Length: 195
Image 1 (cartoon, rainbow, N blue to C red):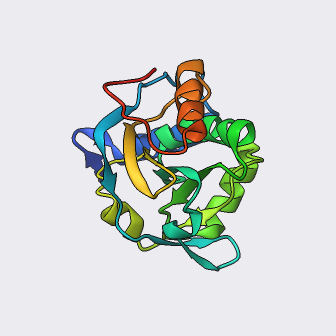
Image 2 (cartoon, rainbow, N blue to C red):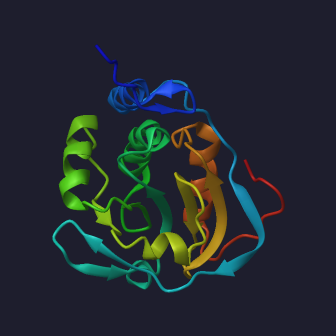
């Protein structure tokens, strides 16, 4: 009897890689997500026009949020680091969200709402709205090369800081820094990290 060779990727059976990926996707938000200081820009940077979709299929532009401080997060349901970070972003929106601040978590999944709604439900996310970018237009316009990545936008629509990788957004230093930006009528001159 001839044995059929198994498919391997770099010496590892493909089935083992698939199983590992599936198990990683099933892991709930980790207590290991760490606080990462924001990388503040010396001067605010212009942000290109962005267009993305709501869960109802309506298209919105970043400029529709002018007057609010916005934390844009680019993420995907298949990204394990994003899975870790999303509960923190949800709690942050619950803490600070309102007429002066909003977390805009933009999913880049090709399946759009069909992928994102069960993901939100499975993690028990309550405060974040569903925003979609199946074309990855926003990701490219914002020059995001890895996910998750977050971009802090001031009231005038200018980029003032970034954070790469999963972040514990409810960490007191981050919350205090965001509150200072929200309270400011204009973006304060930030030298280094104000946290």
